[in-house]
Image (tube, rainbow, N blue to C red; front, top):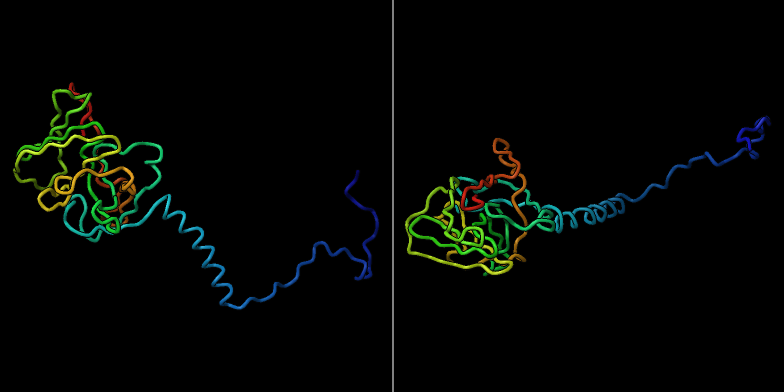
Length: 214
């Protein structure tokens, strides 16, 4: 069937095809448009903040020199749906003693680990490291010698500490961190611009004869 017509177009405007006509849209009250746009923005932003990424501002000195107070971070909330948190990850989580507060720390121990701290040395024992693995932690700002400490982690339990150990409230004082309290890992440092960074504070895992090391 041909889609062309050989008929002359009608000269009477009343007989013309109106399928290509457009009409001026009715002008809306400015407040109505603002409300509609606000609702659309909320419907987009809230799911992103709940399930994808969330902004946080660092407050305090517990992660010096890796992170300074006032730095602006975007936290990835998606990755841990697919992979378990790993030793060395910098994470944001709800403080176990007050879930309304958010803390930022580094994962030192993962499920199945036994963490031993003697003086200023951290040793990990697990199925892969039966004789114990002493962590190489170049990110530490300071860690004064302390009494011997030991903690064994069960399923979905993590041991976290700040990089500035002498100024950090962490698993040494308030216990293990349950996985369900983890919000996500530090993904991007946006501010200050001179410190713009992807996966800030991340370290590369290495392996030796005793197994994986962070």
